[in-house]
Each structure stands twice: as structure tokens, then as C-alpha cells.
Image (cartoon, rainbow, N blue to C red):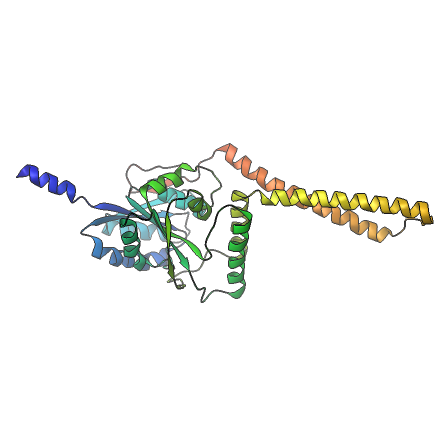
Length: 330
């Protein structure tokens, strides 16, 4: 009888779902998203356990205090507090590194990634047809026109300039199998662009589409300029196309200069015209100098990435946590 009970207990072992949330100044949002996650996962408790990993990315408000309060009332909540602000990519990496689940999901704290989709994500992974269930917004209601246009253009540009296909409106919100998570963590570069990495590792992916949801609390941490820099980061991390452009520009400018020299010599020999026009000369020199500096800047960006990789500094440092077997820096 005891032996049979042991077998039954083994057969009924629940799968663990790890939910990791990077947080920066999300004190108010945590009070909203936590009950929403609990409500979404409650119908699945017979078959699944879940852990909630909250990564505090050097917040300046009461985010850490709120994390500790949630951890005291719910043992499934684990918090990881950085020694300073390392950025969202580092927070995502820390969450994935410390997640122990059979399925691992990432989401933002602001409720723009609806927790209500979690049961459907699990259902799709359980079919065995997919290794990842990702989400994308099909509308951008409530978002500024310039911001929306910029986002759409970014996805078009990065698809043309790289060998990765990031869907328009793709979110970081996705659930992955353990195998896919391990593959993502195997890519140990310091300069990370998670949207690109998730596509680069491959695996079978399906998409869930949803309408845009406005923040439940707090303010966005992503200004237009920060989004532009983040976009450039993604392009540089996954494409050498900017270097190709600089090479083409150099070749074209050299060709134009050679043709101009031939033209001036022929004009002087045939017509005896003096070469005048110092203003146009200054403009040309300035233009060529600008092209050179532009190309040098592109090369400098790639060299800067190489420099940060060679230093091999940790991507994050965890100062405080209630977790066990924690990877404190990586």
C-alpha cells in the first residue's frame, strides 16, 4: 500500500512554473499585478506550482519594501535586489538564471502583459507542439503617434538588416520550456538584446495576440530617446550591416572624388579655366569629413561592444535576496 502511494505521489508530481518580473520603480504596480497573477494561476493549482521571481533593478522608490511584504505573505515570492541599476536586460537575465521551473515566463510589472493569458500559454506548451508561447500587441491604442511609428519602423528595419525575424509588436512576455531557457542562458554575451536572442536560439514558437493595455500604475521608464538607443543596441548586436554601409559610403566617396579630379584636370587642359569656388570646396571637405566621422563612429560602436565583452564583468550583482541557491552575479 505504501509502495503504491509512493508511485501515485511520483505520478502526481506538479510541474513548476517560474514567473520572473524585472522591476524598476514599480512599487504601485506590484500591488496590482501580484493578485492578478494569483488569480490567473489559481485554477491550475491542482497540476502546477508556481514561483514568482521579482528582480529589483536598483529602484529608488519602495519597490524592494513591497517585494519583501509580498514575500512575507506568500512563500512562493522570491525577490532579488541589485546593488544598483544594471538595466532591464540584466534583470531579465538574472530572473532567467535563477528560475527553476519546467516552464519559465517573463512579464513586465505594469500589467501591460496580461496575466490572464498565463493559463492559455501553459495549455499550448502542454500540447508538445511548441517550445515557446510569445505575445504581440496588434494595436497601440493610447500610445503616441511618433512612438508608434518609430516602433513599427524599428521592427521593419531590424528584419531587413539582420537574419532574425522579430514580429511587429512583439513583447518580452513569453513562456518557454526549460530546454529553451537553458539555450538562452548559454548565450553569455554582456551586451544583451533579449528579443533578438529569443529568435536567434530558434525552437518552435507560436504567438498570442492581444489588444494594447495601458499601464495599471506608475509611469513608463522608456522615453523616446531611450527606445531609440535600445533599437540601435539591437541592430548593432545582431547585424554587421552598419559596417557594410560605411564601407559602401567610403567606396562611393572615393569614386566621386576620383571623377571630380579627372573633371578638373580635363577642364584645365581644354579650357584653361582656373579652379575657383572656395565656398563649394569647403562644403565638400566638410561633407567628406562628416562621412568619415560617421563611419568611424559606427566602427567605434562595434569596438566598444567588443571592449565591454572582453572585460567580462558580471551582468548584475545581487545585494539582497530571500532565494536559495542564488546566482548572485553572472
